[in-house]
Length: 213
Image 1 (cartoon, rainbow, N blue to C red):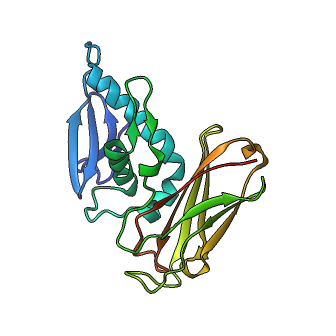
Image 2 (image 1 turned 120 degrees about the horizontal axis):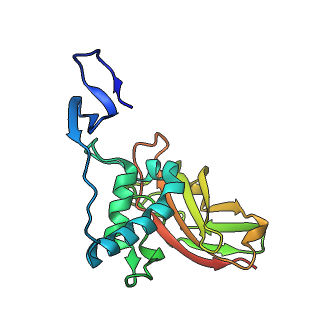
């Protein structure tokens, strides 16, 4: 059902009959409903849908993290849009019916701050994962109080663990508690930095894969 915002002479938002009303860049836009195609999708279309589903499935649960990690100069594009575009272009490998993520090429952040040098993921047991990096706070665009945000992903259980602002660049280490059901699984790890005011960020670094024992 459509919803009028400016009375009967104004634009509307939503579906009314066979038309859809929306707003874009402050303008009222009315378009007709798309017609369902009777044609079967081409191989190229099917492959693109499969890749898109894979990207959305991975990125949607970490949308709040992506808001820190990606920032568009064009307000028409959201952080999620940018992350999806990068993943589709760079981070999916395989063939039709068996596409998968190329984890070292996945980004959770892209920006101008200096990245985490020599980032490594490790675990000493089932209860905790540690991410370490070189404490080089005087190189490039970096500040000791840059805040760390990190992602740990368990492909077996499809679980994402996010850590935001739990450590600084100067700390050189971040510890992340792990759920018990991670035991026996291999997890993928990434980390990045954001400035304290959240206006700048680094390009994320893949810290490797660790099997939780």
